[in-house]
Amino acid sequence: MKYRQAYFDEPLLFEKFDGETEPLPEGLVPKALERKSLELPNIPENDVVRHFVRLSEMSFGIDTGFYPLGSCTMKYNPKFTEELAALPEASRIHPCQDESTVQGALRLMYELQQMLRSIAGMDAVTLQPAAGAAGEFTGLLLAKAYHEDRGEQRTQVIVPDTAHGTNFASAAMAGYEVVEIPSKEGLVDLDALKTALNSKTLAFMLTNPNTLGIFEPEILEIADTVHDSGALLYYDGANLNAIMGKTSPGRMNFDIVHFNLHKTFATPHGGGGPGAGPVGVKEPLESYLPVPVIRQDGNEFKLDYDKPKTIGKVHSWYGNFGMFVRAYAYILRMGGDGLTKASERAVLNANYLRFRLQKVLDLPYQELRKHEFVLSCARLKERGLRAADVAKRLMDFGFHPPTVYFPHLVDEALMIEPTETESKETLDSFADAIDVILTESPDVLKSAPHNTAVSRVDEVLAARNPILSWRMWQEQKKAGGEKPQ
Image (cartoon, rainbow, N blue to C red):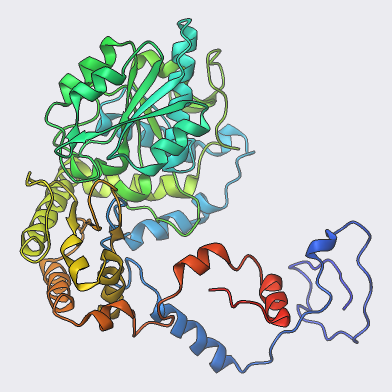
């Protein structure tokens, strides 16, 4: 097949080639990526349409059913925000345009910064980080710049055992020694924290409420203890959905916070697409924020690079603008009262479902939960069952499986976060499904799911022998090797 460059304004969009082949210019495509042939099936349109409709019906997501993932707020994404983000004024602007031609976009970003600053009780916000984990990494770089500017060389980051895994990873990627401290009855062990804190401590990373869904009642004492050592207190914003309008990281005396726009402010979540993890800071860290920052100068909005102490850029441009449009519209639509009610409803839903399910499964730690809770399926082990068996069987009832085996301090953990966007009828249906599953035979659970497009996979084999490419799959088939999962 001849290669050629095609343009949208050509009258003929489709060609019938004569079957001749022409080699690609040398070096244009790496040898390992060159295809020797391309086999495309000739399929009728109705079969193609039905194929993709069928695939959509196999999907699990917030548009197709309850998604009680746990640890990651999976609330419904309103479609009006999708429509706004798709408008040409939002989707067709270019980051290289002159500032005078994108004043609306700059204003939206500036006002979103101010909204997030107010919600979190911070003094300044950057929108640049492209995801929550990128926000964590940025926050630690800000903490590093702050300490180094004061002539301090700190090498350790303290993380509790209830933390999200990204906390450990972000600290390690930033070049710090990770010091994990144990919990005490599901909360920060103050004695362990005091023992771990020293002149080498850069920051203590914490989310409140924590991953068990429990609010840290001694948070102000924790903050004082951390600050007395000269370290900074970092807020993992993953669980901000539980406290909006009730309190804020600023009121709890945190110095740095990252936001998960995909969790708290209803922008798309997961799938490897563009995310957004803005970072807020208290005034002493403002001068280190990434450049550019967005400033208002009279009636104009500008990109300000004049920050001598900045840590530099953490994104190729200014952040993922489509996510900003969605979050901005969501916050405007909800208003302050709406965000508060969202948190109230999230806590109500979680505790309603907790009350129903703790009758049939064990609930470690009896404190009131906030937006999520963690059950233990340990009692099922005497029947030869595990938390994963329950989670996989839930797929047959149309529910996405909750997070399992996290946090690790709960044996056979089943982590559930219903979010505020689910109805009582949905929560009851989920609890009813759990009730039924727990009465079923072990054989049914251990071989689940049964009604999905793909039955249970061998997870160990899948981890050891993943499909990395179509070519690898074909080569393994030809070699008669072990079938990848």
